[in-house]
Image 1 (cartoon, one colour):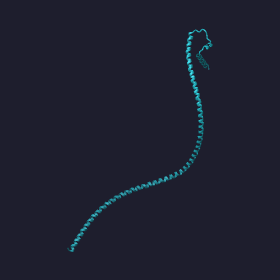
Image 2 (tube, rainbow, N blue to C red):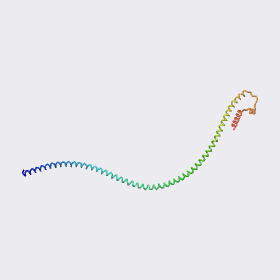
Image 3 (cartoon, helix red, strand yellow):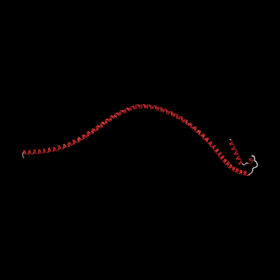
Image 4 (tube, rainbow, N blue to C red):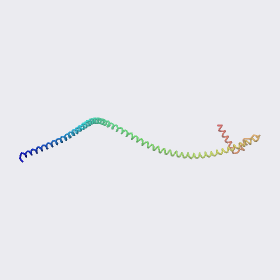
Length: 219
C-alpha cells in the first residue's frame, strides 16, 4: 500500500471519528440542554416558593414588629401604673401600719376587759353556786312542807268523805224523822234544851254545819 492510500484511510478514519464525536457531542448537548431546562424549571419553582415564603415571613415579621411595638407601649404604660401603684402602696402600707397599731391597742384594751369580765364571771359563778345551794335547801324545806301539807290535805279529804257519809246518813234519818213527825200529832212544844239533850252525833254534825253556814251568810 502506498503512502497516499494510507493517508486517505487515516483521513477517512479521522472523519468517521470526528463524525461520531460530533454526533455524540450533539446527543450529549441535547441531553444537557434538557437537564438544564428541567433544573431551570425546578429552580424557578423553588424561587417562586421561596419568594412566597419570604413574603409570608416578611408579613409575619411586620406583624411581630407591630405587636412588639404594641407590647412595648403596653409595657411602658404598665410600668407607669406600677410606679403609681408602688407610690400609692407605700402610702397605703404606712396607713395600714398605723391602723394595725391602733387595732393592737384596741385588742389589748379588749383583752383587759375580757380578763376583768372573766374575773367578774368567776365571782358571779361562785355567787350563783351559793345561791343555787340556798335555793336547793329552800326547795328541800318546801318539799318537806309540801309533803306535810299534802298529807294534811289527804286527811282533810278523808274527813270530808266521812262527813259526806254522815250527811247522807243524816239526810236519810231526817227523812225518816219527818215521816214519823208527820205521822204523829204534836200537841206540846219541845224546848231547845230538850232537843240538845236528845240529839245524836249525826244531828250534832248537821247542826254545826248549819250554824257555820249561817255565820258565812251573815258576813
